[in-house]
Image (cartoon, rainbow, N blue to C red; front, side, top):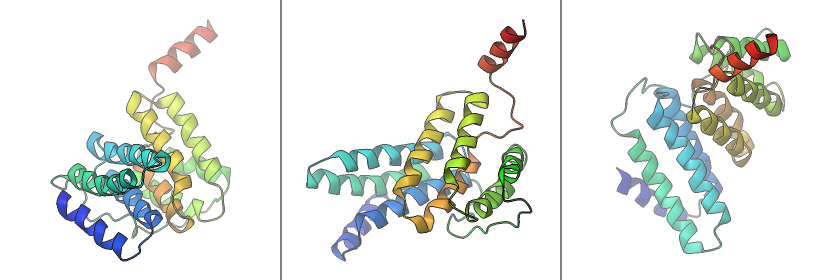
Length: 205
């Protein structure tokens, strides 16, 4: 329950667990909810965690910071609600796939796959990211597709939160978190949004 989650955070803090470890857990829990059911409510679990973490970083009041740690744990439990989707999916357990091309062409193939098979695309994305420190290349590609294919504010705020929060996770878990965002990002096979279509038509004219 929401109360139990907050109580557990108090126990962990009193044991000396670092707040950075709790934020690793919060970000990953939000990403896992998106993997299981990539709809509006799980997406807001991730964007809310992004907002609460921003407040935590920028508050100079220790009591406020502690309260934010408790609130985020409770909110994630509330966003989970009655679990839906594939509840067997776990962000810390899904395995990287074997990929043939770990260069730019391989990244393009991953984002083409997003439009047809998100679980496979996520597994390939994890493998691609683990080949080296190329998160910026991944995020630039994802951002470009959001501009071309994004349909509403949710596409923009979700991708912005993921790309911002990637830097706040510890290195051991950040690639897995970024790969999980595939479940909500836009794919190369998605249709261009209306603005892009009108712009291209005007340029042709």
